[in-house]
Structures are given as structure tokens and as C-alpha cells.
Amino acid sequence: MSSRRDLKPATEAHIQRLKAQFVDTFAGRADQMEEWQDRCLADPPDREAMKMLRTEVHQLRGSAGLYELKELFEEFDVLQSELDQLLEQRPARGLPAETRHRMHRVLQLMRFPGRFL
Image 1 (cartoon, one colour):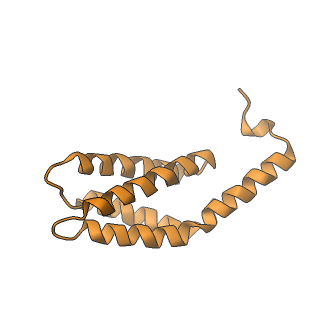
Image 2 (cartoon, one colour; image 1 turned 45 degrees about the horizontal axis):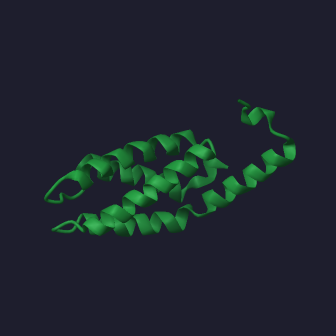
């Protein structure tokens, strides 16, 4: 199996452009995630918003892994697991403090993405 080190410079440059395009989506995606989070904090929590948040986190997790954004991948991975557990609970519960703190960290990373380029 080849590694990214084995890629041709043109291919690596293309991957870097795609990565930059992905990172450019962070601000808008963070705003939407924050809106869904707020709906999850309502009483009772909005299950559909939690499902949408989980789907977005899952997609971001996959892309972060693809573009070797390890820190983000790890945060999204844990956040996805937490959301999966919350969605399995009946009746629906809101976001616990630990999940809210993790969301805050993720949103901060997404709003200031310069370190990922």
C-alpha cells in the first residue's frame, strides 16, 4: 500500500487544494452545527436536530481523516460516539456538559482553521 509520500507532486498539490476547499467550508458548517446544538439544548431536546448534527459530524469526521487532520478527526470521532449514545436513549435527553464542551472546542477549531492549511 502506498502512502501520501509516494504521490506525484501534481497529485499532492491537487489534494492540498481539495483540503483547502474543505477547510473553507468550516465557518458555515460551524454556524449550522451551533444552530442544531441550540435546538438539542431545548426542553425537550429536538431529536431531528441531534440526528442532523450527528450526520454532519460523521461527514466532517470522514473528511478530516481523508485530509489527515488528526486533531479534528479525533474530536469528531469522540463527538460522533457521544451523539450516537444520546440518540439511542429514550426518552431523548439533551447534550450533557461534556458533549457541550467538546462541541465548543470543535466549533472553535472550525472557526479558526488557519492551523490546518
